Image 1 (cartoon, rainbow, N blue to C red):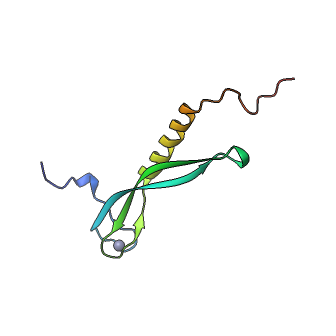
Image 2 (spheres, protein in one colour; image 1 turned 180 degrees about the vertical axis):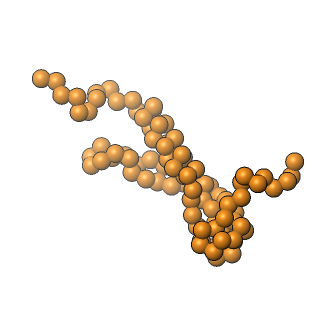
Image 3 (tube, helix red, strand yellow; image 1 turned 90 degrees about the vertical axis):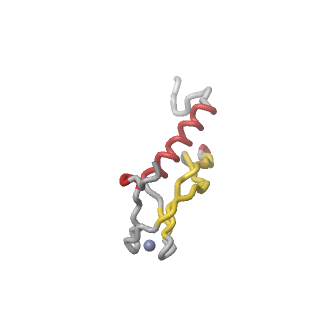
Length: 87
Ligand SMILES: [Zn+2]
């Protein structure tokens, strides 16, 4: 089972080369606004073109961030719902 999977080919958007390697990088990003913003980190697959050195991410990166956000929300379940006004 060492055939190249046809669905897993990544093309460099910069030069069109298929000589692209994929690595994982920790990407930090802010979630939330203002004082409630927290810094989350996600392991994002980063593609690097071996021909021109161009680095890029794809939709998998967004999925990884989404997962980090869900994990954050799950771990830090808010005890008080901010924005709920009781009068
Ligand atoms: Zn390239």
